[in-house]
Length: 304
Image 1 (cartoon, rainbow, N blue to C red):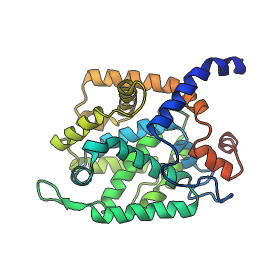
Image 2: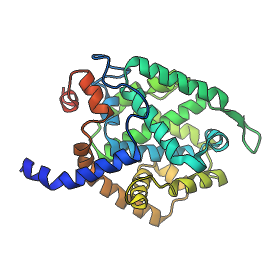
Image 3: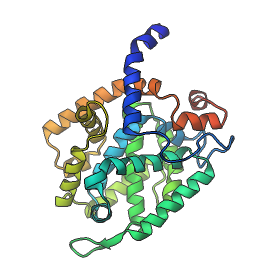
Image 4: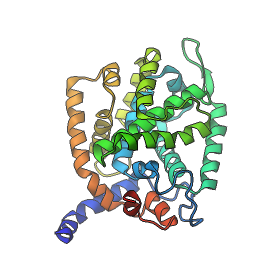
C-alpha cells in the first residue's frame, strides 16, 4: 500500500515541488546549510522550532496570518508603509522575510549572527512619524516584540491547524525557544508561553486599529501574484488558510464578512489535506539539510 500511495501521489508532489521552487527560488541567500557539521545553530534538531518551521504549509499560512495581524498596529504598520516598496515588490519582501526566518532557524550559528546583525543595521534606518504625529522606529523593542509575537503565533497555529498536533507543553517550548531571535534583534519582555501570548494580545488590543492604511496593505496583499502556475488560486488558498488562523478578536477587528469566513474555512480544509503532499515533495530543503548537518533525520529527531 505505501508504494501504491507513492505512485498515486507522485504527480501531485512533483507539481507542488515546482510550485514551491518557483515561488521561493533556492540558493539566493548564499547560506551554507550543510557545514560546518555538528553545528546546531541557535536551536538544533531536538527543538520545537525546527519541527514547527519545517512544515511549509503551516509556515506560509502562518506568515500571512501574521501580516494580517501586523496591519492592525499603527506604529508597526507605519514603518512598512513609509519605508518599504511593498506596493511594487511584495513578492520580494515575502521572499526576504522567508529567507530570514529559514536562516535564523536552521543556519549554523555564524550565519545566524550575521543575519541578525544585518537586520539590525536596516532597522536603525527605519524611523519616522505617523500621520497623527506619533514617532516610530523599527528598532523600538516594543514594536520588535509585536512583530515577533504575531509571527510566532501564526507559525504555531499554522503547524497545529495544517500539519501536526502540538500539545500545550510543546507550544510553550516553542514560544520559549523562538523568542531568542526577537531578543537578539532588541525585543524585550517577549512572551515565553502560550498563556503569556494570549495575555500579551489582550494587553495590546486597546492601541490597535483598522484604518485606511491597513486596508491598503491588505488590498496589495490580496492581489499578490507569485510567479507560479495558477497564481490566483494559490494566493486565495494560502490567504484564506492564513485568515482562518486569526484570533476571533482580530477577525472581528479586520471586519471580515461571513462570506470571507466561509472561504477561509474551505481553504483551511484544503490546505490541511495537502500538507502530507508538501512533506513528501520537499525532502531536500533547508530543514532536511540542517538535520543532515547534525547527522540525524527529521522524523528520528521528532520521535527521540
